[in-house]
Length: 145
Image (cartoon, rainbow, N blue to C red):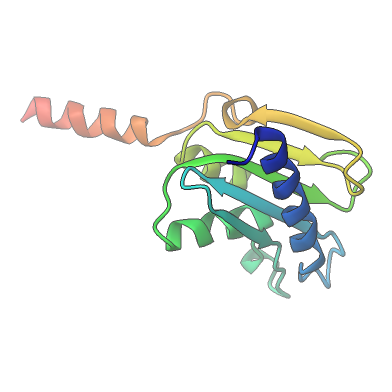
């Protein structure tokens, strides 16, 4: 059984590897992510840009979508590494996708791994719109019928 620290080191290493796979010919801003599912499996992702910028996708969402496409729905941690000297937080779109799957830990890491910042998803997106909001509307609608 792996210890918490070992798992975190493995996640960060995987995120760094994924950053090197990024396709970022326009921004030159490479991002790598590694997602730990409750099953213990790790899913990696890198950002993939497109000449039509709106079609680009972030590393965090790639990792989450890969996990979901493999049947995962519960996550424990997500490590994110960029080319910056300071840890960078995920964008708003990624935060919204993350909160869909729970309030797990996000580990933001500097390019060389020397600086690490940890936050729960709920800290990154306070007052988030979540599936519970839709359930409330559905529940209220069924009460009126």
